[in-house]
Image (tube, helix red, strand yellow):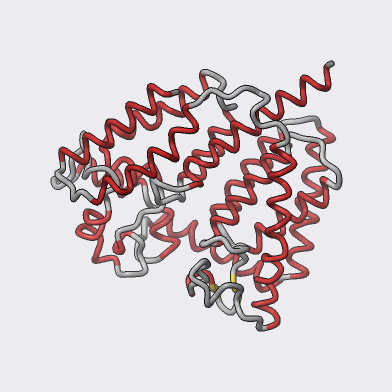
Length: 344
């Protein structure tokens, strides 16, 4: 993997130099290098022995903070860490009078993605109290009110459970229905808000509206196409490594500040990379995942899972973009190790 990753990093460097970016880009290029390099290494199945146990313990640590978020909404508690520089409990996490559950993550959608990752990991192993674990994950996911999380979870439930035996499919359907009903009974107003967000996003997608938050999040690929076809875009080189904000602001300021495009943000990693490094950079980037799948470094379901995450992620530098890949590699190796132990 070192060759395709090295080519991608080199192309990022070329686009920054070609566009004569301010030297500040180099400051962010260093952490990008440090985050992406670990996935280029070759790991044995013994390198992550015990990974799953520690990973699930990490999830359990988030649950008390999630309950505290609920107490903030229902009992008027002060948001945890609201006066600390370590946590960001901005107004963006409040919908109506409900503080979307985020459990110390900077965004509720980030916690939702993390919950999907926990669900993905636990689905590959036999765990005590698995039904309780899965129920807790799904309820917490719904309480984040994250459409990204709901969409990704729907894919994972289908891929991990609906492709099995008839009995497994039936049990999965019953479980999902029961968890949904329980969530609605306990948190009716919160559930209604989630349905409203889904409905609003659906109509925004059909209308290509970009003036609001959900509207600009769902209509990102047309923006990328617009960049490739516009007179002020550079289809081959792009605007330069991680340099997409100014083009977005210049072309979409008319949409108003509720639109993420007008603020220089676009919630789609493919669009970020396409605008920053051009079509060539996007092709090189996608080839990394194709090679991972073809060489069985990652299973194809994990690659699809990660690609779905990127449909709502806005940073080239971030633990969700690169760190999750390392977690999935560790999960695959741990699964191989357990399969060996079961056959010996």
